[in-house]
Image 1 (cartoon, rainbow, N blue to C red):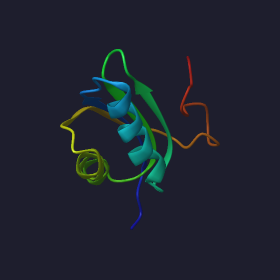
Image 2 (image 1 turned 180 degrees about the vertical axis):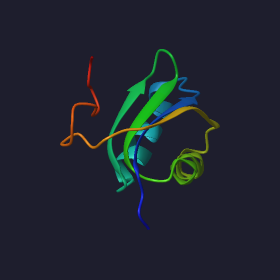
Image 3 (image 1 turned 120 degrees about the vertical axis):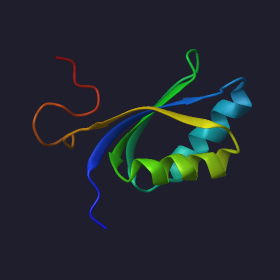
Length: 90
């Protein structure tokens, strides 16, 4: 399949360090993700890569056994192309 490059923000319940580690491990095992960022304080998880947003949300839900809510999905260009990659600040 030909996936587009997305930046997706999810809301998840991150109560403790165990929850944080479970989410982190699940994200590291997913080959389609280029990078991720976990904001424990606000309960937000951001992921970047070439994937189908619904498929990634379902995989994270199954692997972590936590409720996942998609807050935002943006189509982005890969980090090597142009200026709008992960961590880009205008």
